[in-house]
Length: 90
Image 1: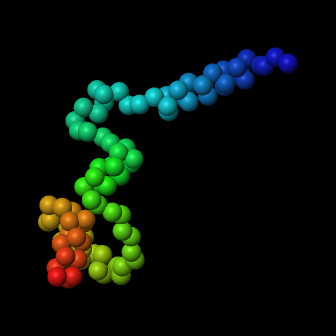
Image 2: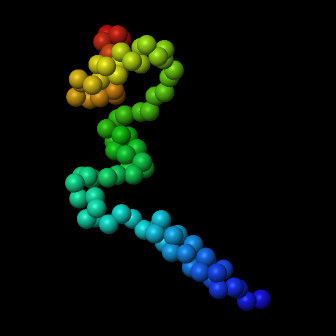
Image 3: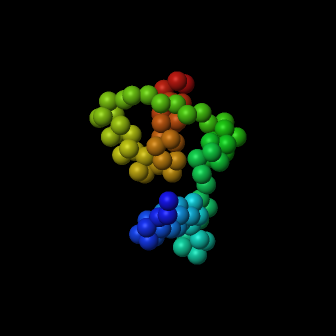
C-alpha cells in the first residue's frame, strides 16, 4: 500500500523534528552561558564534595525567611540551611 503525498511529507517532517530535538544546542548560541552540566554530572560532583540530598517539609513562613537570607548569602539556599543547621546542632 503506497502512501499519499501528504503522508510522505508528514513523515519527513516528523523525522526532521526528531533529529532537531535529538541534536544538541550549537556552541555559538550558548557562548555566554558558561559550563552547562547535566544532572548526572552534577550528582557526581555533589557526591565528590560530600554533599547528600536531604528533603523535608517546612512551614511556608520559615521557607520565606530562609529565601530572604539566601538572597544575601554567597552559598544560596543550600549554604544558608547548612549554616543554620550547623549552628543549631553545635
